Picture 1 (cartoon, rainbow, N blue to C red):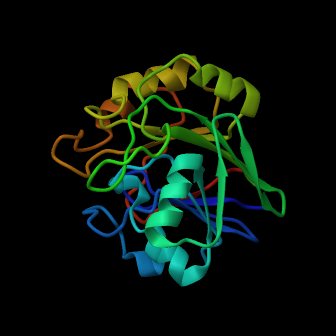
Picture 2: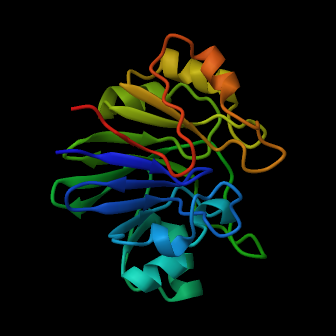
Length: 233
């Protein structure tokens, strides 16, 4: 059973399986790398998974959820804020170490990430940031979220054994390419490493070349916005 990932630019991904269409951090409106608008991204969407409350990650969640009825999953405080701010009806909340069944042998687990968080003009507290481990019949995906380098990435790998790791490489607000390559080499054992969170804004690394150079010899897959890749079976 095939699991396919499509990069939406920044940290956004669309995961497609036989039964599910899952969006992670669907920041499309205002995203210069977005390959299309949120309306196209929303087609068939069953679930939206969020790593934290910053606007460039929550993105178009409310609009997509309202249009599709997709279930939104995230940290307790973030989901409570979305419910209060946008009146979302279909939500699931968890905390670090917790998991949420998504049906039909799909599940998401919230795992640590080292990053700040907050939403809205007053930067309302929306819980801690997190990474995501998404289990599907076609393979397991580790989306590191926005994070610095930390050694417990090794525990995430040892317990969850992800087939693919999605790692931020842009620097300034997350780890840079060199740090992400260190994580891939020292703490992870994935079949593929896909860089993300770069090129979107001037303060970020413009491309993934620093990660590619530092991760030489590792199975790096660099996607263009809108490009898809399937987990090998």
